[in-house]
Length: 522
Image (cartoon, rainbow, N blue to C red; front, side, top):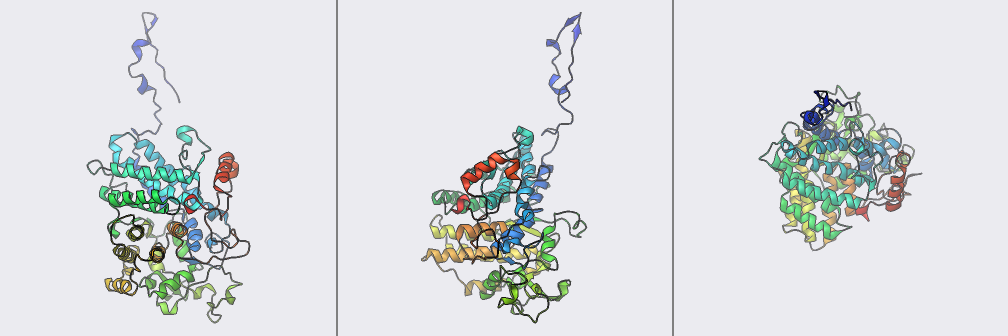
């Protein structure tokens, strides 16, 4: 930094003491970005958006087929759903990590800048606490997918010259995230500046942000139900008492901005749309399709479709009677041996149902991050466990209703009539609390349906709850030996660029492979 020194002479004598007025201001770098010269709210918008855009290949190509929402015949290529066969693809395996930590556009870097620039600045009171809450959205997904990760020292290269951050134990990360949620949510203040324009989720609505904060606390609390039930119960109670999502209007989602598709081939920001609307994308998994069809689920005709001509959306058929799901773990050689395969239908994969493009492949459509339906299912499980007061059956009904009504936020054409929802709940009522394990299975199976296309959350909850009971695949040369995956591998360059901290993490957590369990999944 250039420093300008003014030395004053009076009567031939050096009078330094009399010349310090204004010295500090003159010695400030005019090009430095500081909180008093730059509004961190500008970074907040991009941080929110980048949380949901640019990481799709990790969720869609790995987590979605892991939970058997999706299936594919291929095991190579950028949009070919390697999670279907538990095989390794460097780019898709690393995408969430790279999108999170990118030094320029990474969601965690942008939000960390907001936190640093807004801290202790009264004019940014709510922005600071909103950013702290949003940070938990970013990091809980990352740690749930990889396990121990850089957290406390992450994004501190500029601020503290930490270029090789240590990997923190997931247990410590969770403890901090929950503490941050508790403090930040409580300190949000509707009486101060609300930052409506920069907030592309809730437009600065503090009441909604508070419900969001406590709903995140509920999610993280429930995540610990296996490893630390006492702590899980305590956090779930705090979240419930604080006030969680009260309707689908509280749903947390990020919408795309490229309605016309003009930037589709220029950026990675809309790759989700490309992946679900191309000629040969992943198909609906047989496990997922059969569950919905066996329940006569009214969502089925809006969720999936068969395109007899994959280049023409007008050929779409939504009648469940003419649809079928693709078995997981098959390729173009082994598919003909499956009872699901019809050799009389042209196009191997195109005889199977795919994502309904009119609903889920809109360029300006939403990516769901946390929904009212999920929250109600978590409360239903908490009530079954005796952690909170309230009617588990009503929470369950609210969860099903919320999950079904959420489809309309993707597209109005997917609005499910109330009568159909009532009929579903009548045909499949809550099983009751007498048999807790049956209740957990029913609740979490519906949670699995509700988190369709939110692979991060669905994969985490399947590992936590054990439901639905998915049969693993055993494709040749897969990463798990035919056992169910528990995490993803760290990026290939980590053992080189951050060797000591990487090695310490592996020694603590376990081998860097798809079989090692994360802390809360013990």
